[in-house]
Length: 244
Length: 244
DNA sequence: ATGCAGAAATTGGTTGGACCATTGAACCAC
DNA sequence: GTGGTTCAATGGTCCAACCAATTTCTGCAT
Image (cartoon, rainbow over all chains, first blue to last red):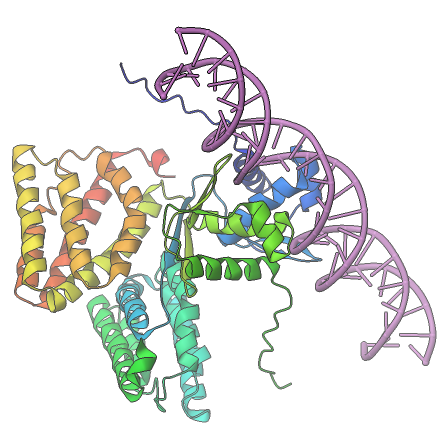
């Protein structure tokens, strides 16, 4: 029997169709992130489908981080929507134990180094100034609050990612941030957690400002290395039973 | 005015609670991928929530690729479920155009370099031998099929990721592979696409075998650089209108 | 007994309508 | 202005059906 080429049948695809239509609408109206899109009731009426179906479609988009729903207010666009988006949902199992954290940190090292290098190549005066501003804020917070500068630290790195010219870096790292943050808050008993990495923020900034990609990459690697060391020291301070 | 620190309020979370309960159930019953989980109606009854709420929760899991729903049959587990999963839904806008491809390639460069370095540190004799075997297969295919070695090329890199000792690398890259592959098959009109990167596979292998992380990292960076060059050359061969 | 077509039960998909909880704007009293 | 109050809009939940695809059962013909 000869193999017939595909009859790309698509019997049921209500909510997919809804999403497609919605994507078209967003494009047509040139909606930008932050703007509100029509209410579920209006969408249901216009698309001639049940409100429930609209909700399922929007739930999908919400899960993908494309929209944000606020009860009583509306549904808001959270990211740019284009017809040819590639969705790549990753679910990483077991990020709570020490091994899992080290693994995510290795991913971060990979991205951090590359982002710093790209940043050194592409960052313009404005971007470099912005990174420098975040660095100053971080150093100030570090000194005035005796090392508690997690928030400012994070903003510094975000500025670097943003200046890399590739939004994917910020996207991926932002998704992992929750996990990192969880441990930043509970530094495994290491009192001066993060102190060791502190000076490298400035060296990274200097290499970026000097448009030295390899140097920036090297400094970023050093920074993550100190974090890994802190983590290992912290783990050593705990009972083995806590580490699974 | 002093800035108050955040009160991270969290009022309602029905479907989140449902997912949490469901995750607990899956763990308790030790359900494995492929197995069917209770019907929506039963879940709604047991959890004392509306079937609609159950559906929204399952829609989330479906979007994350954790379950698969088959009408008339049931809902089936598609991946292992653990209570501490880290969800990282990535949506690459416009992955079809040249810019989007270059951006994903930058992510790959970051991961490829780090994976090669880790591999040089951790790979044992068995892993190195496996990588060498994939390399031989690739070189053989390359010579006998005049450069058509995409499949073997991919398997070589997979072997490196696997030997890095961190499954996240393979997981992330695998999710992106579809996109890479799409372009490997349509090399933008560049006849000898991939030829330039060919020799670096062996140099990477040699640095890994020599347990030289920095060397392996450097060679991996060179490899991706040649791919980027090929891509740019290919893009230059096309009309500007095709590049958006 | 066996095989198979059709009926029946099961299950996810969809619909419509109702009500609740939150939000935000308009309004009012002070 | 400031601080409540009211009220309409909007997302969140619930219910009770029915539709569509799938699976299972049934019963007849062989």
